Length: 342
Image (cartoon, rainbow, N blue to C red):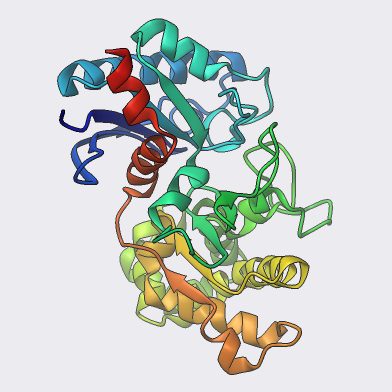
């Protein structure tokens, strides 16, 4: 009997993706992308309205994909804390402030009539980077519309049953009253400062504070009006070593490096895998600048050379959640359970 096909979905603050994961070959196909029908498209909309819109959008697109793929199960990677029974606790980059937990697994199973697994998007992405049963501990960090993290150790992702753990993006690293806002409604959170959205907002603030410096930077050629500056132009300027853009990024990287040193000194994880649209758009230069900040801050007990080996970039695509969700579903024995049930 052939291995089953799974439908996989990845719901982020900017993009909702679906795909077909072949459990036997470990391959991904039929990847389709659409803007997530959440806060990015509807700023200011009430949380319950956005929850309904996103759940409806996911249900419709996943249902179409399940039918198209002939799927026997669905795995969803979702950008927010998820409980063991598939309830999304909160999703700041998707619907902003905290609302009632969304029972996403139950909603999807009722609608689609197939087994559904719902996990945090980084929990799923971790499984793409697990190379075998003896994988050393590592921390996966995404830098995109927000910042998230998950630690893998001894065959599991470190979470509790309520989904707590790995939310470095909501560590309050700037306690000042005027600190940058976060999508969750708080201020001074790492994600609001060092994410792609956070760095872009910082660049616009820096341009307003120093219009002459902005005018002399490569950013002015790419976006003469700072209000129209976007992340692609910002990433391009950082890759080109533009001093103005690089200084803006360093402001956020200082906080991210501090968070990493905290993880290291707490539990001794020495490998940090970077993914996410913004970090990967900047590319090796992002890892280089982050490593410089880590070396400047220091990691207790490590030499600068050892610190220099801590940070690596993940694969330069946006399929981490999709592939990881498929691998996680297969690892949980869904393949055997679903084949038996059919």
